[in-house]
Length: 339
Length: 235
Image (cartoon, rainbow over all chains, first blue to last red; front, top):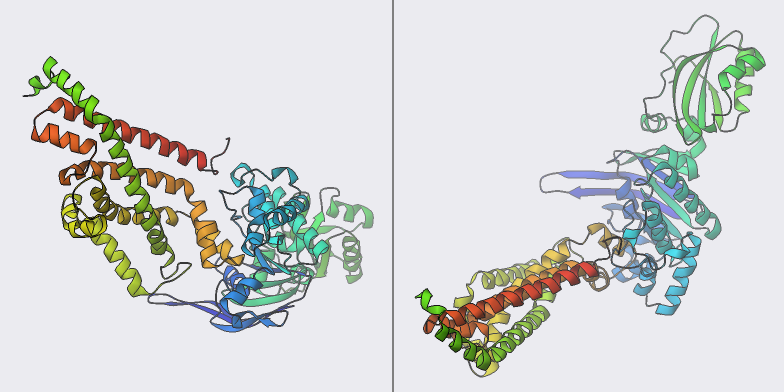
């Protein structure tokens, strides 16, 4: 378990101070995939660097499996970093070493014999699906392949925790998906706790169990991903869930006898069926679309839509039930004043 | 005067000087240059590393007074013209070699002139290493010495080779100057025959040979730097 307690980090410049993190408290369960999301400058990179003490917190502590990271001596900390490894946005492979030698790097540092290290590295190349790239140099690989090598390197020392710092931000959507799948597999197969730093809600949605939303160095919302996705409370969360500003239900004045629902597409496969048309055909309910902000990633739809349904409340509930039967669609009632 | 330089008589004389003296001169030039460069690298490389890692935000921060003194010494030695330096270090040369004149004696001022230069070249090579890669090494649990040996130096090998090439060609030029204090080699021939005895043809041939040696060093260096760089694709 990782406990982050009252973590504060202040950067002192020549004539100003920047509070990058303000009193952050988080608990991350073993074996989970935990998302930390925020806009650029929210402090997420600083937060992840405080977990492995690349940045020393100004106040507060990070406790991993009962060990206070801040209290460790330099040499103890280096040993601990074998258990808390990291992957990066820019992959950070050693460009003058082959892929195999890159994966051997962490093993070399702790004095594992060459033959043994290379054997382990070959196994890991299998794990990440690049067994034929042992003798290739990083420059010969695509971004996605480089990140796979970086993941193999991060796994070499059998870590308990994997920190992913914007690990997919430099990759295209398809490759992002593949890398996220790999991280998911690793989490399942080896039970490694993964902390995923990102600015993309789609990444959180795809692999995380829980998420913390960081804004200006503070955790403004924390919880199960599904909850936050369907009921974002803070403005930062709404901004991330509905990047285009979301849908304001007050766009049109509530008509007499109109019921409103918000349909949240949580990665639903939306290309196969015209949902609103079918609602009309199957149930005879005519819904007007009052506002919509959706986008598709691959074949999946993300975003939300506000529907207005004329008639008694029971009609609205029928529509709600119907729409909810579709996988990855969440429906909630909207009062006029709830944004 | 120049018209006299290319007469048949001058050619015959030049040929006999070439036959009797150039073999040794070329050998002396090469061995003084290579020896001085090698010793200067042994001293300059670690100092260059210290200049980078010892900084406040480096991987092995060193006391500020130490960094100030180190930078100061390097800057002072770098700013003294080589001609003056050769004369200034005569006592040191005498203490080390036993004499202040001759080919071996010229190695001492060459090393003293070259190591601060090499330290600065090494510094610039190591600064090219992507800081994200150093952060990666730190996050992997590498100690400062492991970061230096396994990351910073290996990652900057192509740049170090290019800079070593610059160093060796510069030192070759200095070694020619050391003919003035009795250092051997093509420089001595150029000065003795050309400057003191107006035998311009001999001087000219000595200079051409120096140009050829520089060219050869440069080509080998460029080739090694390129072939060692694994960042270049399609090899």
